[in-house]
Image 1 (cartoon, rainbow, N blue to C red):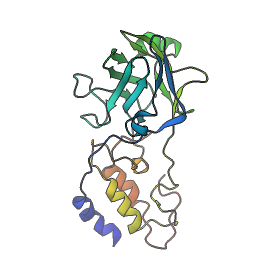
Image 2 (cartoon, rainbow, N blue to C red):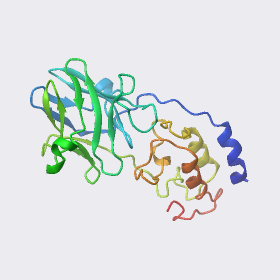
Image 3 (cartoon, rainbow, N blue to C red):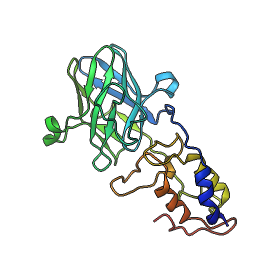
Length: 245
């Protein structure tokens, strides 16, 4: 019965808007160093509510440099849902290549201008391009600001890292009761955003890996629904632990 009703429920679901999300920067590792601007703090803006957040294919939020003020890494909602175009001031920010972790795109500081995170051409040969290291969940390499020089993401002890969302195994059993039923689907439904529309904060576990997007594609859509449906068991019926494979 639950499976037969999914289509109607999906049609009825309202795509939620995306506000700037709470930071997922590690509070113990929140700094980058600019040789001409000092430390940048990616964690503390507005108690974390407006600080830097790492999404699957882009970043958003603000870092604070005591000597030069705010650095805006993006609004948290690219126009195409996947990556900022960086063609004008309405759709700019720092993107993440989901396959390599390499960063590209622009951040803006009102007192320092544009900071370019795409240093692949300049530094890639020495593996010093700005990037996200998925093994250690930290940033590495260097970004470049034309007015302020290099920004070091690669210090051995003072660096920025992020805390990935911890998901249950399998992801669809949201309440950990070893079945996947209406309670779990209710949570999935609340996260349903539709294709190319970033899902609300807290829905990362429903954004499943896809071809070309090993860490998800930022939305919760029909592709993710199909994987959820594969895990449905019904109330008090033990789920198949391999359902999400």
